[in-house]
Image 1 (cartoon, rainbow, N blue to C red):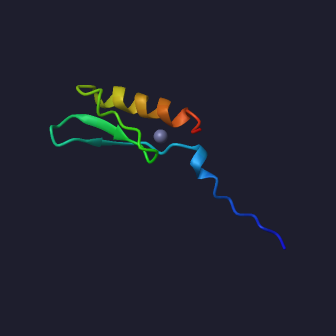
Image 2: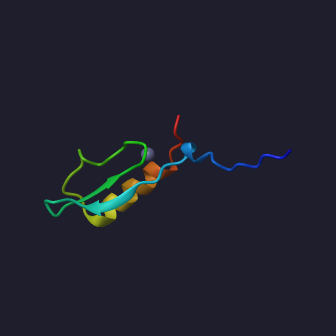
Length: 59
Ligand SMILES: [Zn+2]
């Protein structure tokens, strides 16, 4: 009776970078996080921000 269910994905973030209707870059995460308050960033800045977010451990 072994149970090896690897479903502890809640401890990680999965932000995705996308383009808004206004033509700006933004990222949203499955945890509800988003870069809606940091507009006018370049794609690179948004990407770095998303990466930093993905490295934080969810509570
Ligand atoms: Zn997140």
